[in-house]
Length: 402
Image (cartoon, rainbow, N blue to C red):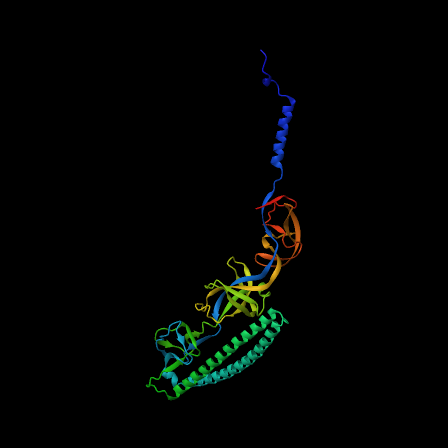
């Protein structure tokens, strides 16, 4: 019986067809496919270079009301946050009568009175010098405003003079407050002498302690009636609106800023950032260990607030803030995302998308911000680059944009 033709041996063309299909399938499987990548465009945009550090607020001027003599202080009824006026009674002290008749105590009181007078003279002279400086910088501010309106100087120069004039105004207020406080301290020392001159062991005269400034009670150190020693602190007074910010900055960052550098205070509890400027960078640094145990060299930076305090009514002494220092900025810069940059030897490089392929391109990079970097050469605006290029990406590979 003859076998059907379809059960016979395969012909050679069928073998060739199967072999070709296997080769095509293998080639298709190993053929390099386009890599899926994220991309971004090189554009002209504003660029700001800044760094941020944690800071804390503190009173620009604080004043201690202390006991000038040993004695019994009556219960202080003022609470932290209560407002006081300069010259207003804040505490009453019944001096220890025995000390009133001690010649050594009287000599010490006379010395304090003379020292308070010298302090008043020095504070008055400092206030006069601060007033003269304020007047000179105010005149300079008016001149720079006129020059800036004529575009003869840059806005940064105008802002620096304005910041100096504002700081001079604040220094004048501070010097005047110190002069008022010195005058009150002198008057208090004089009252002690007067009290010692007319006191008797049985008259029970009390010494009235007055507030040296208009402000608020910040802290109360003695609450109940009790015996206190001469020089012991009773109350701390200050003006919560006259705040400044202290920032512990890394020394290498502090080298990039100076007096007048713009600062934004963030995460202070309000809806909008608070503007400020660097007032002082202290000349001495100190060593501090980070949370990870890394030894760091830091320096204190004092930041003056620009606003008058109306936009921060709840901000007080010792509050935490985040200070962002503006090191450099421009409104129209050719920028590339920092996420696209990597080092190729000693040069900065990116993978640019050209004809659906990744092409290695070297760039000249200028200022580097948090998310963007300045491009000074290598690619033009409108070019697309690969974000987060992995180690597997190579020059010339086919890519597909996500």
